[in-house]
Image (tube, rainbow, N blue to C red):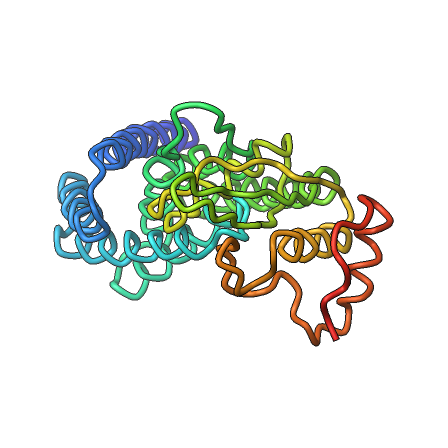
Length: 295
């Protein structure tokens, strides 16, 4: 009995790994093709429907999960700029899993579909030919193994339990790494045609330039308007110092409303109760470059 169960489990794991690899290749191919928002959603919907049909499922269910997951991933990529790669993958997996359950499928299958879209389409195509070095993520590394393990069937959900433990450990490891190595960065973007300067603030792990590059990749509108690559201004592990530096830098170039400044809102609101603290912290770390402009 035991050898038969072992063979079944092994076969399920290899089968899951095969389909996972094929799904990853399809998602990477769609990302390479490119296209607008609607084109990507349509391609993912058809691809995921076809993948489910090939595995003996219903094309309509795969189409539905692919469409909702692709739409959600586009929103996460576009508006989740404050999120780490691990957080985007986890959010995407939960979205796909819940949608699959609602549609009558398995949570693990939907999570796999959505997570692979995020990893091998959105995150694998950064738009940089050089100078871009994405954050290493334990979660991103663990997801393919967890998905393969979740395919193992049996009298008890051993595969799901191991996969869940693996993912939980990876998420915790990413959180610890983020806490220990995270730094805050201020940077500027310049439009060579108009001369406008945009002042930004971001955070992450890696070198300051890598962190600024990642943020620039998500600045779709700024790139479309002709703003060049980011130039790192200052960096620190002090959140307060960088908050103050961002506002001082905006004021240094003339402040919000000045034709030379592309920022539409202040880095620190005038009535922010911590405004003076941020300003003084910036002075302590970097020196003063503009007077305090809050209330």
